[in-house]
Image 1 (cartoon, rainbow, N blue to C red):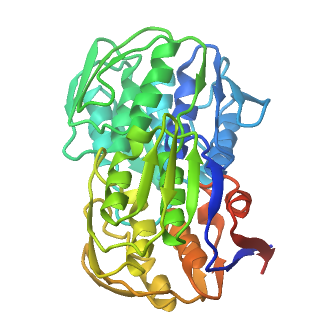
Image 2 (image 1 turned 45 degrees about the vertical axis):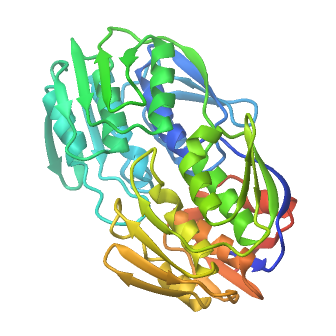
Length: 419
């Protein structure tokens, strides 16, 4: 039975919320464990749909998966034989493409369907394929399935034409056990890449430079076991930061790495939001009406594209006119029509949204178009007058753990009901 969220808005959020493990780390780390000759224990996994889909793919590929304490998964990769990812499972999420790099490294072969996930624009995997081919793999596409094969992977210099988190991670996975040295230039620098490199190095890989734009990988023959704890989810943290600001709230967001959120904190301060940073938490107070600003999304450490949609809500109720320039995904303004239903004054011209702030939004039935648009709709409902109904929750479930429970704990009037 399909469900919807009911939010009665205009309540100030107040209290403490604890952030879960990073989705974007988890979806790379789980396929990375395939490279172990034995297995690994992963901790602080978020309880989200994408993790469940990855578990299905592991089981279908012959891995053994044991779940112990909440957020903990033991993955035994010894004995895996299947290098083909199930079509129906893989198409549910974008990150299924990491199985190409992992299978190619482990088996010398991979067959993985084109990935699914959020429809936020054209997401080519040409940079992934360029990297695999540079390492010696032969790639062909048949009936929507990417087929990769390599008698031997050999390290090579690889320059990415565009900064790509997915391509950077996938090439790292493929290069870990390749013969010789691989150097990735113009690599993405996101904390997720550092997290995945730390896991692989703990397994015995030789990866240097993760977190910079040049990553050097010296191939090794074997990778062993390890225990690894996933970093906090900076996108979940940023979502709660924006929600506190939008509701004139006062929320302490715990279990975060404040340096990962510097671009968000800086922009919120520019909007006259009070931000206090501590060792592993951030306090956000939105006592006054926010001031309009201009935002341009760029790769880390710049302002993240994943928080552009939630920020568009805050700008919709800010004083003045703000401009958002989306430089990453051309389809990331699909939520604007839904915000307009709630009274937002937004004009989109290509990759630019011009937002004239209103004092208040009004509750309305809205539809979620993708994961971060879902977060935006929730924030809009929390800040609006009246009642908001949000449908198509499957996108939200892919990336936010216990959203309703966490929001209720800090004063939101929100419930999940059957339609």
